[in-house]
Image (cartoon, rainbow, N blue to C red; front, side):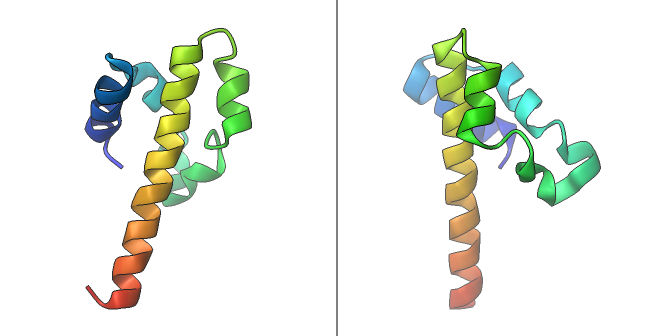
Length: 82
């Protein structure tokens, strides 16, 4: 998912953007490509990273949920042929 969408979700839910959270979470995409979600995309990793900032932790959890939703929609579209 594009970072602008993650930042939009931040603004809608949290009232402000946390671009640094999304950059940290997706940094492994540079060398892992699509498989980057195997790193930094679990609630435990996000909570350990942002244990001292609940708003950033919530931004990271929203990031994970949005990515999962996007993946499910893509799979659903492929299965339906559209």
